[in-house]
Image (cartoon, rainbow, N blue to C red; front, top):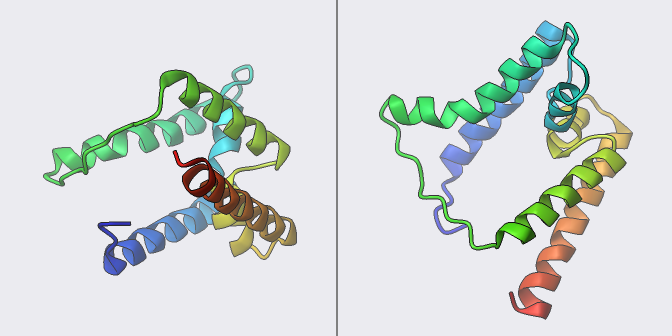
Length: 141
């Protein structure tokens, strides 16, 4: 949180909320990343195109931003590759267990007034806080 700027955070949040609302209004779909990506891992269907375009947009957007003159922050990963693999598998398992991820429940579900999403997001946040407490303060990593 060294470079936190409230204006850019507010603008980013407004863009995420607006795009999630437009995605729901125009396509009738929830912009939950785990569900969209999970749909790409099943046999091809008539939904493959929009799912692939959505994921491609997530991956390519920073490059487009940089190409238009924006500056991207440096990216460093301090974890080992095996730890990243385990973490990724745990996130995938948790998303499956929770019937969605933070984007689906936290952004879209709460915005729709879903009690299930409020509980899921509260659980995600509590586990994240506990994980940081254990890893950073008790284990000392």
